[in-house]
Amino acid sequence: MKAMKVCVSVVAMFVLVFSALSINMAAAENGNQKDKPDVMGFELNQNIAFGEVVGSTAGIYVTGELFDLGPFVNETTGNALMAYGEPVDVLANWSDDVVLHQFKAGAKIRTEVILWDYAHAASVYTIRADFKIEEIDPVTKDVTRLVWDGTVAEGLWADGPTDAYSAEVNQLGCLLYGYNWDTRALDCGVGTYRLTFTIGSVLPDNVPYADTEMQGITITGVDDVSSEVTSVYSDSSSTWIEMTLLPMGGRH
Image: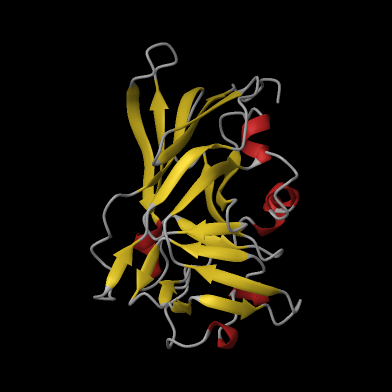
């Protein structure tokens, strides 16, 4: 992960403090983005490209509301920003913490992914985002167990608490996808695991906006390199990492 992305490389500094903050809020009345605050006052402070456009004039925001395409202003910083709704090529970026560190079985691991559109200097949001964790054979790489699977769409219009995958706006105003992997709660012992972020090819069944159209999101690569403890991969619609959990008493 490189420092050239203004918001991306700072994210890891704050993940422990804000890891529980999710923006799976109930949808409020549709309106101009200036009128709707984010959770805990966190405001979007970067350009954004939407993977789903409603009526060609609005994107579906992380709260489930509609967000007007075009120029907008962060009212706290005064930054003039832009919301896009068109096909994009992106680099996928995993957080430094999960790529560079090796974890022990029983740990709580914060996972974060950012889709970055360099052409518009924008972070990309889509309700088609899916995240899964699988245990794999370390030699053959065959899947031996599906540990967890969730999508952003599952939580957007959920009634009450949900364990769905989430998109979040952090305290810096950066949009990211996050999941708190509790290896103890999910019975993840010593072994090799594959974490996969995928952009679905069809709209979810629960989208309430009849005139929603998908915009193409093509992953052209990853803005990370494999480390001694984590291997990073991608194709046009997915990015995944493979990592090994150590015994409880192993070296961190």
